[in-house]
Image (cartoon, rainbow, N blue to C red; front, side, top):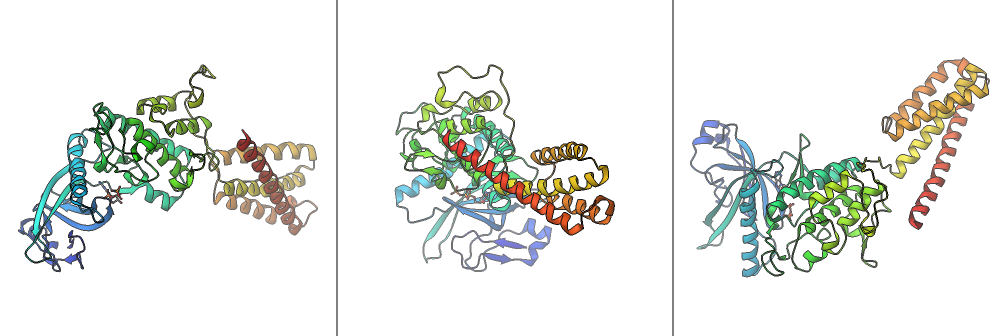
Length: 455
Ligand SMILES: Nc1ncnc2c1ncn2[C@@H]1O[C@H](COP(=O)(O)OP(=O)(O)OP(=O)(O)O)[C@@H](O)[C@H]1O
């Protein structure tokens, strides 16, 4: 069995113990030690670490198994191991934050199904690699979420659609509502701290930076200790001032716009105008965009004040942040319907498909029906249906090659669909129609972008 040594800087952390492949030996053995550095490997007598998951600001996270639970329940072992050269005060603070993660998970982990459960928190004192000294490590064991965090998902699958970010937004808002109601501010919301389990359920992780707030004055219990992720933290947190529920809402909105645009947070913020400039990079329902912009306002008191307020705005008509004093434009609440945002490449691909396919259908129908008027009407209806199917994403990606391929093959093998034209001429005409469609779409897209910039 592979056992991974958790000592920081162990030169050869991978250990292999053939005898531990036997489940009886695994359950009864007293202890095993790293063959390179002598570090105990069965943590707290029960957790067997097998793989390094990653290193964060306060330590490393390992995949482990609990040999005391039937079925060797998988879990995550986090080790306190702050990066960089910290002085004793900073070290103490970092240790407090790590312990706070344990406290918070113990308090809320088993009360909410989208927050990992805490299984154990314990120190381990071991002989140091430097002779005559001892090292103390702190371990926190929590529920393993088998899946991918959203940062990894973004790298692997690319930008999120509007529908996908709406799901993330609504799910995490519900978790935040629960967390805030307990008087806790997470303070480190970002894509790498949101995990999607294999069954699709989203989890909020990393409570290492949380703050309990009880109407504390600035500098008191609710003030920020300078633990944040660059680009995601709002001004009050960056300045080390008091933090609020709206501090988390700001970071959640930054998370959403990075997922929507696929760009890093810092590239979406224009330092010259001191404003988020993300709306030109992606097309979404303007009401969703207004909600995100309100969550991103620099002044904490101008943002939504609670997760509930955002959830309500998402399910009802949005009152734009800038015209809060004006009456709403429509009286009937309307839930936000995700609008499929198409990238420029998708639009141009769709145009080429529609042009090519449209030309083939028109030629085939004209050869069959011999009536230009009926052909025009029927071809327009079919083309309209094909375009509608694309807007709904019923037809996308490889369909755009397969469908014209099949249509061309039919025209090729059924000569009476070719009319008086040769197959070569038909192909050239269809390609020309595809190019014309691309040209028109580019022109309209350009005009649309210019108008949205002006407005
Ligand atoms: N409960 C968990 N289940 C599954 N994977 C986890 C769990 N907790 C953390 N991870 C994964 O372990 C890795 C390290 O996590 P960790 O929280 O230590 O650092 P981080 O979130 O990457 O950085 P930072 O602490 O600086 O925010 C990340 O890839 C994270 O997705």
